[in-house]
Image 1 (cartoon, helix red, strand yellow):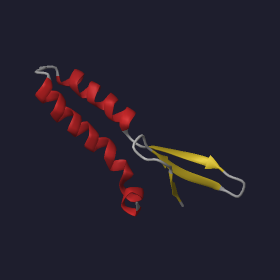
Image 2: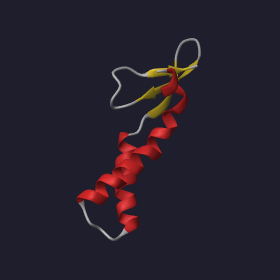
Image 3: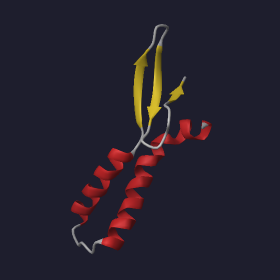
Image 4: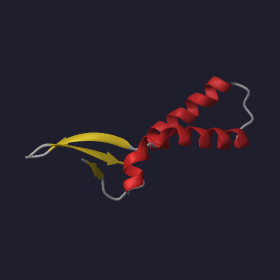
Length: 75
């Protein structure tokens, strides 16, 4: 989890590349902007989110993701 806390921002570009490769194999489309836009939207919806939660003592940054059971806190 320590590695995920430091490199969670890398998931978004990696997801775009993976979706571009999958999309290129499934659909033979010549329009690169449309393909990139669809892949960027999919990556945006599946990427982790960083939230700032206000607790009684301080503000805490949390990373929430679709594939995690509970949020990860960053100090």
